[in-house]
Image 1 (cartoon, helix red, strand yellow):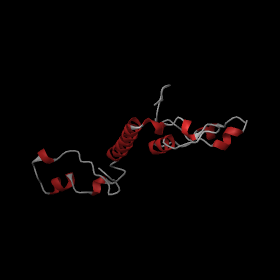
Image 2 (cartoon, one colour):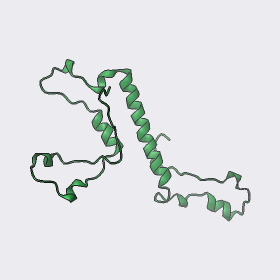
Image 3 (cartoon, helix red, strand yellow):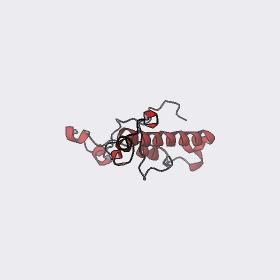
Image 4 (cartoon, rainbow, N blue to C red):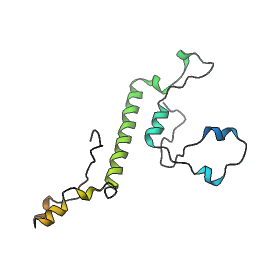
Length: 131
């Protein structure tokens, strides 16, 4: 599918302003630090069909023309997106106010000395789908 290699998505990919590409002025330091592109934005852009000018539609080489390999690619990239979402929830429990839920504080309050059932819990928010 990618004969010349493809680095894929990473956290350092920045968005750009296509209007700035037409200007011959140097880019200021403040303009170069745009927001990062999310993994979903990257792969949504990657999966778009883009017609090429001057090439008939039946002769265009697209990522969509790889059949089952394309399906496997889409499933793998979805799994990557879902893993990133779950990692965000896992590592940002304090920001998501997971301490509000019952857990270790209830165990301490009830004076339960059996600590075998107590561990690091990860609370999934109700907006989490499919986990």
